[in-house]
Length: 220
Ligand SMILES: [Fe+2]
Ligand SMILES: [Fe+2]
Image (cartoon, rainbow, N blue to C red; front, side, top):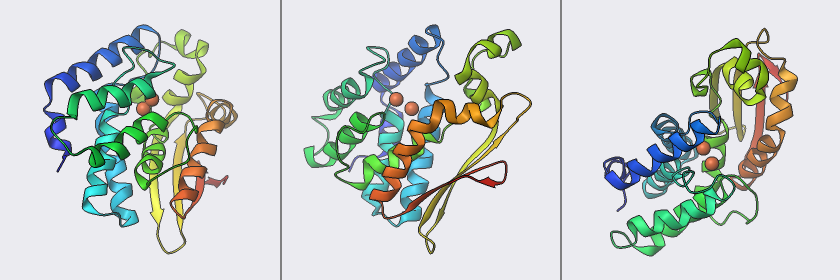
């Protein structure tokens, strides 16, 4: 069976993630390297565990989280499709195709709702990835640059971001702590509304409601 620790030691995969991060950094994006990969992998696994998915599905969620941004060094606008294919190229000889397909689908759909979810793996990845908003993702800390980039500003202002699963109430909730001295909460919605709608669709597929709480205000 495919395991996250096998992948974390795969030299080619690590090079792809590193090249993707360097490419996006040059383009002014936030951190998309090993820190993001490991954090999304861990978060996806925790969500899968809390939902009671099988141990194989938990591992597939973790792997999707680790690999989802691996193709940003080839294209930003198509990194999800290219990522799925690149993942297949890397691991097609080592693993069963039926184990790879849900991961390929998760990578291919993590940014856009083009396909219907076909398994819990893509739905878990959407929630794990879209909830990684944090100040340490911002490469520039200069006040001037922060003023000019809304993504940097919102990430920089986010001091804490946490996913909680309430199994009895059937709620998956994202709790954020935003420093409103850096950005008004409205700016979060300006750039993340589409992501929140996608998270809600993912939660719905998993049989849950999606909740959003910012600075102790329940907004969803
Ligand atoms: Fe992505
Ligand atoms: Fe990502």
